[in-house]
Length: 344
Image (cartoon, rainbow, N blue to C red; front, side, top):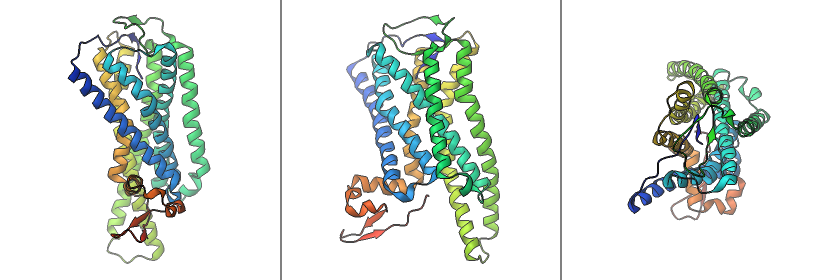
């Protein structure tokens, strides 16, 4: 995932065996969390029919992209970061570069679509079911994969228009996508500034409306509500909680990616190039976002914790589980109790 207006590699360092072991353990832990956590998300949404909501389909597609990052991109870049050189050859480098740009851009697009989904759910709840249908979400998902594939293909085909790139500290066989100042600027605008501006704008509006909803619910909390009004209030509360959690996902994404993108923007418009260590740190911080998402789901989504428990205890393999509902065994494990499945 290294895109730069200068060719460089981390200078070769003689590390102790302890340092090598510590680095590999650290990166492997991040990879295991990324793969394991996103697998839980994928299995949960695919297996339990109650979880197949339009919003969760976007979460599912995002988890697929994060899973592939953990399975393909992160192991390769882990070896490069620890060994300070690329040892996998030019063919694997091309494959890695293509897949990595695709998956990172897919994640960004999906977060934009999630922001659009939450905007309609909170700001236009009456028309939300008719606007954000399953068909609409599948169209979002298709766009969220096709455009990144086309963009990555163009970026590699034109090789980032690498004229004018400064070369230094080049490690033989290194692997990175080279961007000159113009392409670096365009890449940062397309993959950072524009999408993040959309997300911030939408979530700002969502935050304002959510606060208005909270005040309205607070005013009527002691009033006697009819059945329909009570259901509407509960639905608004549920949507606000979902929006809060997904807003945290977007915020973490911005925090993880901002240093990397701003560094690329800075090096694109100036004659100053960042040090190899800075690029490595910022690049891995962006990768860690794929591991943070399942952690956020575990902290805020009861369905994620329930599904994780069922998977770890292998109860998901029981025949009752194929009905697509969450169950909980009682103390003697002789009876199963149906759990109410809510989005939050």
